[in-house]
Image 1 (cartoon, one colour):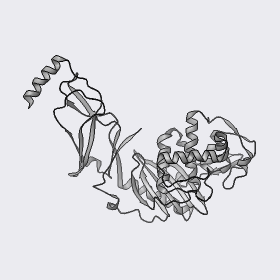
Image 2 (cartoon, rainbow, N blue to C red):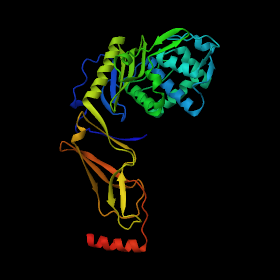
Image 3 (tube, helix red, strand yellow):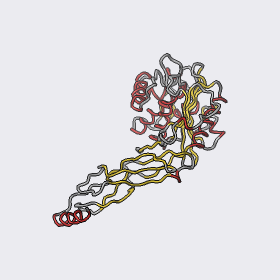
Amino acid sequence: MKIFWLGLVLLFSASTWAAPAGIMARAWVVIDQVSGRELASYQADLPLAPASLTQLMTAYVLLGDIRKGKLSLGETLAVPEAATETDGARVFLKADDQVSVDTLLQAMLVQSAGDATLTLVMATDGSEAAFVERMNREARRLGMTQTRFMNATGLTEPGHESSARDLALLSRALLRDFPERQGFFAQKELTFKGITHYNGNRLLWRDSTVNGLKVGRTIQAGFCMAASAQRGDQRRIAVVLGGRSDAQRTQDALRLLNYGFENFDSVRLYRARQPVKVVPLYRGARSMVSIGFEQDFHLLVPAGGAVRVKAEVITQQPIVAPVRRGQRMGALRLMLDGKPIGDYPLVALHDVTVAGIFGRGWDSIRLFFSK
């Protein structure tokens, strides 16, 4: 679902709020999940090695393949020899093992298993290189300007890099585009071949509101995490890159999530195509026209500030038919504590054709006496 986003830039820019204290990661960002609005950041565009956070994009592409019917969760894949030779985390697959797509995805997202990852990507594209081309196409489409993938697993390789902001963008896209698959990212453990593998995202145990997403670690990348959480109807995403330890990345991510929840509220003022107001219409087949927003209309306010927002609908009268859906009809003027936020365009939510001769004549008389 598309969202019409409103940020109170004039009322509270990033400098208005004290930055989260004690964050030690090399780069980080926290965003509102619903709107994508950045709440705080540090070196968020710095290209860095993303380690196994790479597999968030691997998962994004694979989940798209499942939706399109190119793969199915119940389908069984034969493990290729090349997949068993990979470095890094594994679930110790053997060549020609028969493993379901469902289990392979769990192994990738819980254990960061490179052997499971390569089995999946080689099944869909024939080679890792071909799959990585698709990963980079999706990165460009999503606007990940600091990202270039060289492999599907996240192993250290020259030129393989992303940024905290890009990975937050990707995390949001995953949760937005595949909400029915969120359980994969919240899974705490996987037992496979008699071995139990535990998710490295410690926040899944520490905070019951955390529902994902992924951790990673290499010598070059340090300790990395993309964490998502929901408290009530509020959702936040935090990304930390270049942490010095597991404990530090966990604490950094939790501090960022807490900061986002404690200082901001994301409020949906109007649903998509919900009438904000019904206004009089002249010379039309209908005497009124509904005006509102084509997409959900969200507002970011200081925590607890939603009840202090005042709204006024402004239209230029008279409004005369014909009217086309999407035609600008006026504006919604918002105020917080008496200070202006801004004016936001309202559009017609439906067509209204011109009335017949009698209706037009009667409205012409009404218009004459309304002047």
